Amino acid sequence: MDKIMLRLAVVDDYPPVSSEGVWAERQPSGCYRVANIPFYSQELCYEDEVQVCTEADGLKWFQQVASSSGNSTLRLVFFAPHAQRSPEVLECINRLGCTWEGASARFYSVNVPASASLDDVLDYLSQCSEQGWLDYETGLLRQ
Image (cartoon, one colour):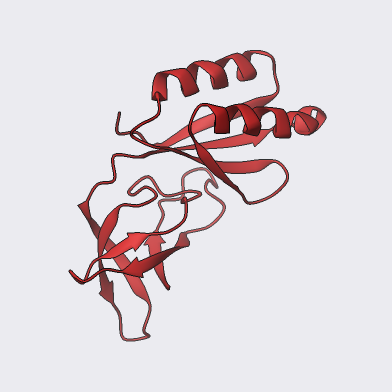
């Protein structure tokens, strides 16, 4: 596996970093298939095949998506008093056909595969948000 770096546009101190790395596996075509869910990028999703540019320091930087997986990316942040709700919410996310990765006990990225209903996932997260448990944002939506 190789680390692919992504440049991020920081606006009003968000995201808290100006770049992020995702793991990717080199494909016979020379492209790389993204092997984890990005936390901040709005340019690619899990399982996309991407083109990279290797710079003089050896870092591989994302250039463009060569082949879309059809997946979408969402991000969840749980509010402090409701962080204990995260297992319940993440279990429901799994039942809706999604996978997730956690950056902390309160911050998660979610992969919505093309085979899952993005509308169902967004409806559920909207209900959780209305109850004050969490907030969510979109990374890259493809459905």
